[in-house]
Length: 371
Ligand SMILES: NC(=O)c1ccc[n+]([C@@H]2O[C@H](COP(=O)([O-])OP(=O)(O)OC[C@H]3O[C@@H](n4cnc5c(N)ncnc54)[C@H](O)[C@@H]3O)[C@@H](O)[C@H]2O)c1
Image (cartoon, rainbow, N blue to C red):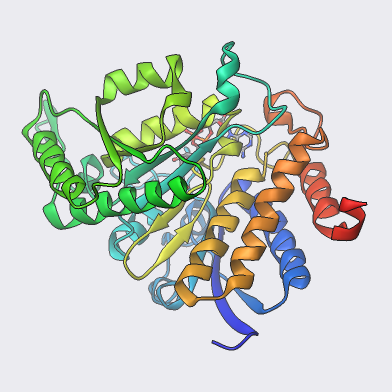
């Protein structure tokens, strides 16, 4: 690729606060690419989600689905509103179809404590929290999404599915992430979180985990049942590095992770497949605060940083990795200096003020920072 590589980003603001945080995120990305140079992000906007469904009866147009599949990356705000549902009573969820169709099996959800964020736990070691939840995102209990049955209004059934091909790729991703983190001082440990004491499907999951672990002897392995994992994430979250788990467990555990480091506004996510990457905060559309300029946009920004890193590796463009570092460093500096103070955890900054602070930090020339 040339030094001015052009990358097409499919932008889906979605619903609720997704609209607000996406607009802010695009401003941040424009600023960063002006500063870094060497690549050009072209944003193609798509209307997908509950708002579209309410207006048209369709949650995602076929042509839009095809178009986002051709993009270099997909950037998503959040999708869904509790009051807007399909006829079967479940919520509008085209993002689940996107995950399935593009095979986005690895949901990578970092949980990291930033300085000066109010501690959710009294123990001082909570300042050391830095782990990653890897949530399988195409099967597990979510496999049954849209396929569940209600029998005679007396019984409901949903089916959990674990497959060897997806599990192998999932575990390989977990070992790769642990290895990358180890080079930066990480613990080099992957914990398999399951319920292998009760369910055959999870005994199978763990068996495949062990097979892949044998191929990655430089990484330590650990095991935890999901209920014990929930306990341990309250009593000793600083001990964990990479946690890999089934879809539904990951859905729940990653919200617990977000809560440990401030709230969902601190919970970014990358959803990766073999050929596609989708980047969105782990939170939803937060209807309780939408339209009030109260959202914490940092999970959105940090998801965008994950996108830049992924694109850098995929296309071999170092300036993209540099841009990702700038964004990560700006968030860190914002908290360390006390300039970032989101309302989400008792601060005084709404979304606009948080964004302005980050833009200020990003626009400060390096010479001014070192002088
Ligand atoms: N991937 C997605 O797009 C996704 C994920 C989860 C939920 N949803 C949908 O979002 C809607 C709301 O779901 P929910 O209320 O269970 O979860 P939610 O994540 O939207 O909100 C949970 C709580 O966290 C707060 N919160 C979330 N993000 C925040 C942010 N950036 N800044 C400050 N506070 C934030 C909310 O105000 C709320 O109190 C539902 O329609 C749900 O289906 C979508």
